[in-house]
Image: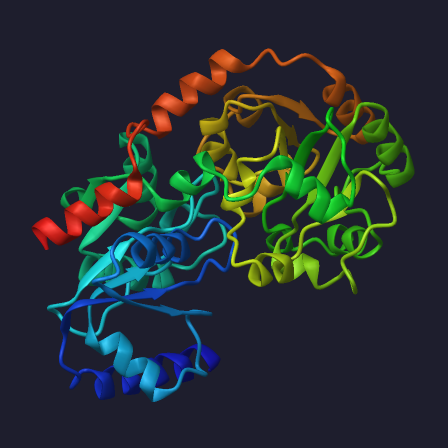
Length: 380
């Protein structure tokens, strides 16, 4: 019922906004990616700094049933409508630029184990109807996206993603990040970041119970004091960035430990940062099944993969690439003891990282934002 009412709301607002005259120099960004590698938000920042002759309006959160009609008129007036999730536009003459929000690792759409045919068919229709430009970074990306969403080949343009520009040119230095999150100065510091995927969709109450109890790694032998001591001994600092749903489990999102800190959305919004604007200041990544690791390959830094829930995730939603432990370019661990060993191991995965980087990013060395702007302003 909620979905029906929301679609009805969208139809009514679109109808009302359809009578707004399109402005050739107006861009609207419908940001559904928050501050976690949001291509839309980062492209908006680029446009405001590099091309002030364009009027840019950021709409977030998106989608939302709480937008004023004035905002809907802004959407209706835009020549370019930028989306990070499902393609959207009001007029046929508008140009939808679809950035999406990550190279797909997890199955989605028609490939997923946990979706229904009716929804999948509707999403395919919206991609075919509304998407004019689908930003791409590689042939592999296009194959994965089309397998899931049935996107036509002629919509793809290999211009890369704004988040990659931010990743390679961090806004904040490592020393500043260390000071902001850990209140310390350490010339030997190695900053790691833990970025798990959306674990709620595993539909396992035990997983959520572990997170609520403070076991943010959801490892069977989790011992936060032992972890902190090991990190401290090696001058390693772990930034924990959970999915927004999971962050709500932590009342104040603070850590009592010297070498572990939570990164919350308040910090990002207060400083006008996106996660990717500081991700380039880190030295290693810990993740599970988050596609962020594909982007992290651009930094050529070590990656550790937690795989204790691999089988369950494969059964619940599914992965597009397998066998997972042979595909990923880093050490796979199933418990904290293996993780602690991995944190001290020398890195032996440079060649494998480079192999996967070449497969997933064929626009290396380019300014993605520059290429996107040239494409849209010259050809559309």
